[in-house]
Length: 60
Image (cartoon, rainbow, N blue to C red):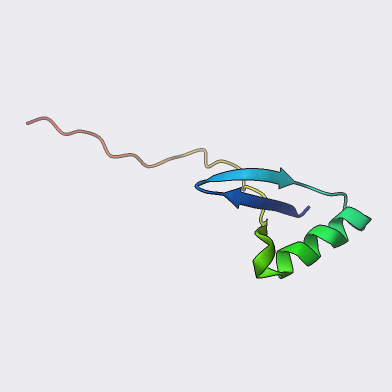
């Protein structure tokens, strides 16, 4: 499912996930294709990784 978002400044102002094949989906796809609109298509977030590498503080 496509996700579209519009940013304002340094944060996401709007994020939508229209129903595939709907009029809204077509409208957001057209907006994302126009660089001047401020909208872009983003991929859905992948599943969080279960094993995350972190740095551990070593003793001195």
